Image (cartoon, rainbow, N blue to C red; front, side, top):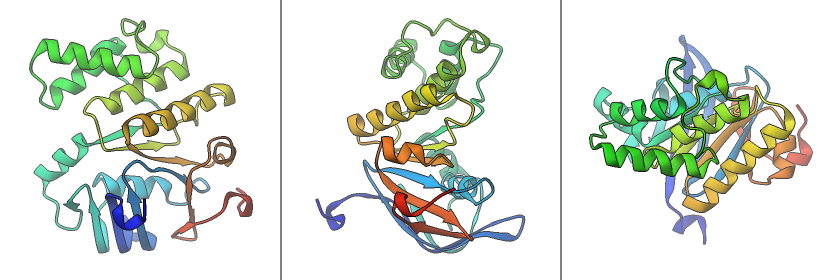
Length: 234
C-alpha cells in the first residue's frame, strides 16, 4: 500500500513546540499512519516527551499546522481535548497506577471516568485488555504486589481500555531490566500488528530497533529527523 492510500493519523506541517515560551522543537514535518510502529529516539532532554505531550494537547503548538485523529491542535477546545485523550492510550515510564486499589479497580476507575456505565460492559472490557497483556489472573493484586514488568503490563492494559487508534509510550522500559523490557516492547509490537493501533515509543535504547525493527525518528538539535539505526549512536 502506498503512502497515498494509508490513513494519516498525525500530520505536522512546519510545527514549532514551545515549553515555557522557549522553542524545544522546530520545523517539524511529519506524517504518521494507521498501524505504524514508530520509535522516537533521542537523548534525555532532547524533546521526546515534549513531542508526545503536544500530541495529546498537554503542550500547545506555537506555529504551523498540526492535526491528529481529525483534530486541529491549533484550534482544539477543552471539550475536544477530553475527547482526544479518550482516543489516545498513554503509557508512562513511572506507571502512575492508583496505589489504593487493585489492578482491576484501576482499570474500572478509568472506564467509569471516560463514560462507561454498565457493569457488565466494564467487566468484559477489563477482562479483554488483561487477557491481551497476559495479566488475566492478576487483576486482584495491588500495585505493590506486582513486579515492575507486571505493573507496566497493567499500564498498557489501561491504555487499551477505550480501543485507541494511537498509543504513546514514553520510555516504557526505562525502569525495567533488559529481559522484562524486551517482553514489553514485543507486546507493544504485537498489539500494533493485531489491532492496527499505531504506536509511538520514545526511548534512548537503540537495541530495541534492531531486535524489533520499525520506523525510526530521531530527536536532535531541536529537530525531528528520519534516520537509519546503523548511522546513529546515543
